[in-house]
Image (cartoon, rainbow, N blue to C red; front, top):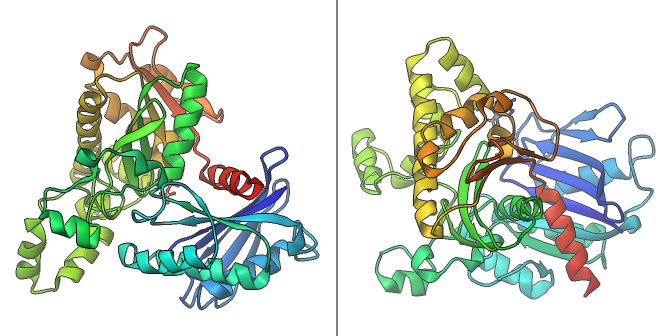
Length: 397
Ligand code: ADP
């Protein structure tokens, strides 16, 4: 069966078609700058030249139609008609407390997603627009919602509660949810296969533009660094991660701006960007290597915060068998990985700095030395495959 995977962000739409008979990606692409003047689509088919289409794409409905036109295009497409698609898997940001697992989409599910839009006002409307457009373009094709919060729904209450008035949890569902669930789930599965056991204490570090860390016991998430929104946790490209909540009012007063303007700064102008004016970790490292003090500080802050999370999850898990590094930084950044691991020897990590100095193409690489008490694995994540697998699992029922 061929599955179309749709991953809509606030101004983007990523897609893949995966042949689930062999789990091979047939094509993938990205629509960028939806709703802006310079929107465009880049379509990739393995072994072929990339196709770029520049045109004004005003909203996610138009973005989805542009994708469908491309994948069915006579010259560049990979299917002759949408009828070849057996199921669609949608990445949906927020499950709220309504879903414990991925779910087959019907009108009731769409209604609940709309109700939960308040928990993800940037992403949820885009997710819902893509679901509704798919219903129009390919009526009758089963669709599945795979939630970014899904993998974290196993967190115990004492881990996901904020110590705010209990009524605010009951009435407004204000609590920690966690994100990047499909990535944490995927790398957990690969790590357990690699270790040859599903009884393992694993810390998964998804480090990309957005970053989050999870504590996973025997395959189930027991804690994670992101919160009600993806702002909480480690330091990211443009997000501050953890700050004292009182900073919000203080900044609002300092700059004479509103709370939402402060949150915009914490989401989009903080993190690496806020410290050294560069959000891309590769460039932050280049600046640091050239002696830029603020960039050096940004790298140190990033690594230090991650080590603190690893330390606290070591305690939460009652010891650790394996640490997984994934995402753009975890998979690719030699300097980033070394900076994080430097100082964790006392936990029983014998990190192989020499082996780390390479660029890997393998799906799993053990980057700790053979006798290391805690194994460190670099795993290439595959969020789309998790979504496609859930689409197959739920439509087969
Ligand atoms: P997203 O969260 O948007 O999915 P990615 O997982 O693609 O992001 O990660 C993007 C981050 O990974 C950027 O900060 C980028 O600089 C970093 N990155 C990607 N490739 C490399 C590399 N070869 N060396 C260092 N950092 C890299």
